[in-house]
Image (cartoon, rainbow over all chains, first blue to last red; front, top):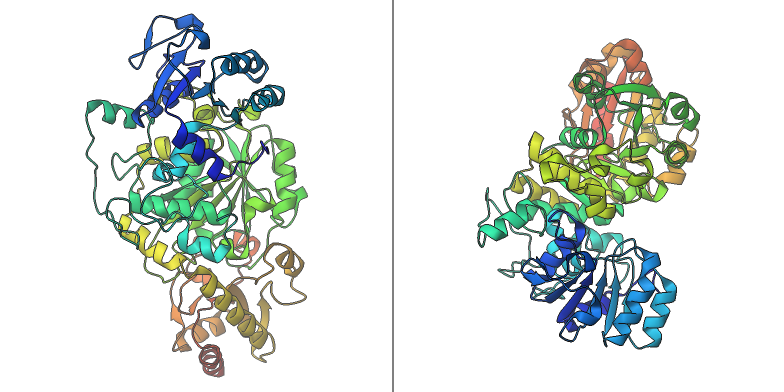
Length: 162
Length: 426
């Protein structure tokens, strides 16, 4: 797996197959990037479980915050990681343990050792990307703020979100 | 499709069919505002937490297509369209500069930019220092600890000078300073400055991008290749929490397109030079044929320059496409497909001869524009560069007898024949 460059088809399959997301490092601060992503994914129809031990039991965007991934009471398709690269490995081990199908590390987050562990366990891995940006790109919404989606299409329906 | 070609991008980038109607051509969204689903949706949009439309001063779906297209053509991460090239320059500076800051600009610039930088920007406390854009060392010598930006034109108007983009980019990288390049005269068909290390690209889309002389428009492109946090103290607009967005930090939240978003969310919102969607539509229509037009513009310009160079009544021709020109080597490096369509020459007989020539043409249009399908002619010393002093004129490559041509895409024989009969009257 080339983690420097992902094919659109790979990202598209993950975003279309995922229904539930556990977000590790979710923040209740409405101007933090994690809040932006959480709110956006909820609006796009994903079920999102915020995970943050400092806010366990509280709510973010109406969703109960859990202390750990293991505390999330339902199956999780994707674990979205808003933590520094050096803290990712134990999160990935927990993601494998709870049966997640994908580990997604946010922009600026990359841990190749953790990625290998996840892939060896059969999980898909995305690193140094943002699911909001990728969803926006493939749905063409990101063009609404002048961002280069790097995609051309003659189809009325976008690749995701239609 | 992976790595679509330049011609494909000119037509398709940003311009997928309209999702609501299926319209194949880009619709003109002639509306000021957009309904919100509910109060929460409105708040989400105003907080920049979702992609979407609010009000056409902040963004418009027709203008957005233009933005994505130019970002794709220049190899940038994002772009912003505004009412004019000068407005694009204003927003670039507004996003990067604080009062008391300095910037280095090439002496070889469009006269309007020299005026804007010397006088208009001075009122904001943005202070210019001048350098020679063919000499990276000259730029380096003007950089101080207050410098936030270096500004050059890839292909300079009107002197036809080709700047040392890669050399200056290296100087900027070493100094931790942004390099912004006005790519109006070259267009991305001839030169893509980001590939040579530029961080921001600006266009007067009025010129070759629109290409038909019918609309004023400006564009800025974010190269996505400047590490704002590595120079956090220099660019507080991008690296510190924004008071007017509840503490949002643009370079953090929007990563490698944070500059373009800040230019929109702060600069365009607060200063207001929004582009009309109708003008955006006309520019978009022009851009679909950019490669065809630029190839013919350059082919015709090369022939005219060679013809003038051999004409007994012509004193000198300044076109980077001619061997022996100072910029010829750099033109082959940065603009290998052609040296553009705008250049200058001097008629024997000086100022009066130049004036007589301009009054004698029949097909060339005497206008203060470049980059039209039509061939254009002007006398810079008395028009576009009129407000400049003699020393600045000389540095900008403008002599009293200088005539500037913007060669169009008419039949080459007719272009030459018009110049021939006009020169005969001089």
